[in-house]
Image 1 (cartoon, rainbow, N blue to C red):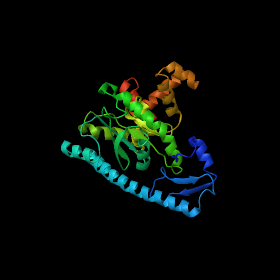
Image 2 (cartoon, rainbow, N blue to C red):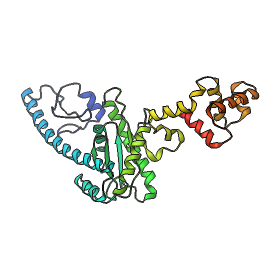
Image 3 (cartoon, helix red, strand yellow):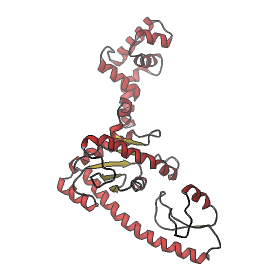
Image 4 (tube, rainbow, N blue to C red):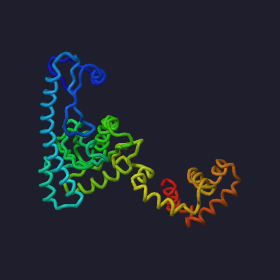
Length: 313
């Protein structure tokens, strides 16, 4: 929201409510769902309609020029991300970084999203940030002159959390603008000291994006600190195959339930029997059946992890 000098200062929420009165004209230009422009006059009789339409047309011409410049920026960002994904030579990456308006020296970080327009809009809300965005991804420069720089490498994890938190604060606003069921999600890769590490940061950001869900729509790769969160980044199609291959023979009946409770109780026979209201011998028999059907020995830690991961999948 911007205002002319004679317009009273108005909080955004009150302005949104006030915009329902008076006259509002759409500024016609190419735009995404996240950056529609309106020309609003509180008093419907303040100016002739012809004048208002002419003013809106002036804004539309300005927006067209802005859109052309943004398209050129996006093209440079798209080329940069393509080179990063292709593991291009350092010289090519350096030239692409400069063409995209970023310094040739790091550190950098890659961010990916399910919607490129939403990502660009979100990054535009990071004060002082320097970035180049393409379809579904962006490279952020995090050098000493960037507002979100975190200093030494030891501070990288804190910087990732800070960046994810800042993006997380903006993301609900974009979700409210998106089409129902759009499922906007965002993944943040780890910081890399130089351009040579951009490929790794891109892979990390894509993995974190896969791990993001409705509950946590913005995920930083360094915040995946449990086995369940790690597995959530594995594509659902892969998780489904692993779970079916490992547990399929158990079905969804009493053997699977017994295994779940047994693992949840740290493989304690007594606590499992109490939780299921069974005799301990019955628990022993069922777990023996589980081991026979899955080919795993639950006295071995790695076999326990195999079955636990399959249940999580």
